[in-house]
Amino acid sequence: MSQKGDFGAVRKDIAKLLHQPEYDDGSAGPVLVRLAWHSCGTYDSETDTGGSNGAGMRYEQEGGDPANAGLQHARVFLEPVKEKHAWITYSDLWTLAGVVAIKEMGGPDIPWQGGRTDYVGETKLPPRGRLPDAAQGSDHLRFIFNRMGFSDQEIVALSGAHSLGRCHADRSGFDGPWVNNPTRFSNQYYILLLSLQWRKKKLPSGIEQFTNYDEDSETALMMLPTDMALRNDRAFLPFVELYARNKERFFADFSKVFEKLSELGIVRDADGNITNVDVEFGGYIS
Ligand code: DDH
Image (cartoon, rainbow, N blue to C red):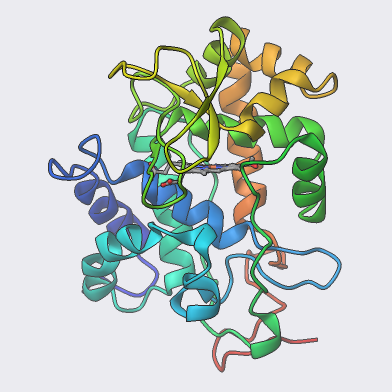
């Protein structure tokens, strides 16, 4: 047990659990990043509901959302850290795990602040259907991400997280990694999106994704329809090109936009204390 508020000790223990020889590409990193993103990505600025605060994925309504299939692996990986540092809230742990995993996989430093609570008022638990549907196009991307307050450029920057991890047929129905080295944070996603020939492929399930190789190749890479939308949309494309040629710029922008994601729905005072949630007693202050 570490001292309350010793996030440094928690960071160390998260970093230690990333190496998982039996799991996926040998790393828990990508699925932890996805957990962090999905815990934040339900935010709706109009009703001020959703977001990381409250760790709603602990409940069936949010945790059992088909969009969150597979994220139980990430939560299970983090359970020993929660047991050891019992004072940390799940909402802080999940967002911090994403930030630590990105850094450990070679990505940028992302500013992160704690203080989220696990209190979730019934009315604050987000309805299902707030996370993006990968079978859609650019209108859908804007609909989903504008709701959280993100611009075209921020949508493209956030999507660069697909240089990590893979799709699993038994989770989302899509299948395969975006890049050759899916445990290294990089701008490869943009480079490959622009430089490879992508063609539509129908999976046995009937789901359509994009592939760069013959169906049977073991080294085939994939893109989702939403990934292709970034290349095919005239307003998104210049940012794909920018991040493909300028890795430093991508890292800097990604850091800012991931921080913004992790703070959605959270209001802080000058000292960093969250002011719209009563941390001691739980509950939102309206
Ligand atoms: Fe993603 N993502 N994502 N994604 N995502 C999947 C996997 C991962 C979409 C769909 C999928 C972001 C945006 C989008 C990561 C990070 C981020 C999978 C596969 C689908 C489908 C899941 C599975 O089968 O296991 C869509 C659609 C969007 C969009 O509309 C823009 C963002 C913003 C992030 C982020 O982190 C900032 C990561 C990491 C993974 C790999 C997970 C793993 O287990 O590996």
